[in-house]
Length: 170
Length: 256
Image (tube, rainbow over all chains, first blue to last red; front, side, top):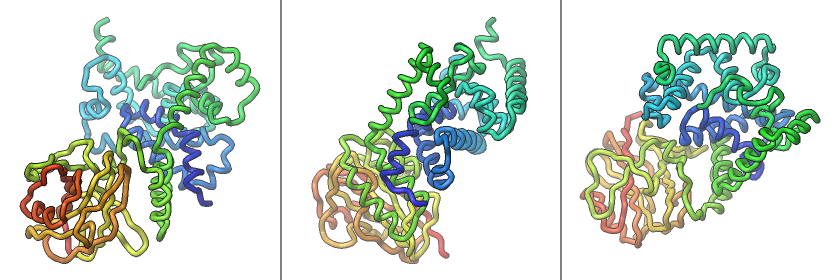
């Protein structure tokens, strides 16, 4: 099914703001979020028929945005390899605890398996309940709980190994 | 990225970001959610913020351009890109160019030489200059290429310009032997006048010969019209005329 420019423009008006906001939060860079905005809508158009059948286009676009951003983070790591580079890319050159925490959390997302990372984003960035996350991942609420427990354990282990400045000072 | 434990700092019934975005998009929600949004101070404030965010985004001047790009990227068909571009171009008389020119992101490289100076031997990137996009044309489509893409003899190249200021534009190429060729306009004696706007196609296309292993394509942007012969001479000498800027992209050329 073909889209027209005005139809696609209307999609941007309805949903572009949340794609941009979430991508900037996950990727940590406005420029990367602008790229994500375009790439997400290209993917939406590639699946136009499915999109038109969606009861909740927002949920569908959330999924595409999350997956795109995780892929983008992994690509960045493959290309650059080092945490310091990720910090520079995300404007986190300062050593503020907030910036370090954000960098560490992105590293943890990369270390997690894809479903675990998706669940972590939905829970911790988007403040979703298990009941909301479950259909987005296509799993049960119990599985969501298990995925988030794994992620929490991963965070705890990382903090034990390398406490953040504010934790180290206390 | 701000991450908090699920539902930290909020009431247990507070809605997620997704629910707020669904509400702003006008999607169907349960009466419970509507009731909560009406009665919870925190969530009603979040909803108001999301509504403002959507309104601000919807006011962006480049949405039609973005829509055209997304369609073009999704389905490049014979003639389709050109038709979409024609529609998009009508909206390109911008009062300003957006902060992140996507063409720069796609190319990853834009080179600027200030007027009245020598062309640099090494590329250097700057913002704000006119942006040159090089497209390789095939019988069925025209696709942007980057310096990481190799050119081949027989390739037909077309050029687009993104500029924040109106002006006069011309494209020249130099091969590895130093021979200068004229890319746009392909004939005539004058530069091409363009208004401010994104991805404005320059008329015509050039076909590469089999000579040389490298091609450097240079866009001259001048505040006044200049004879193409003088620009050709300047390009051959690696100079930039006063009142002009030069944006260059270098491509390796491989035999097929």
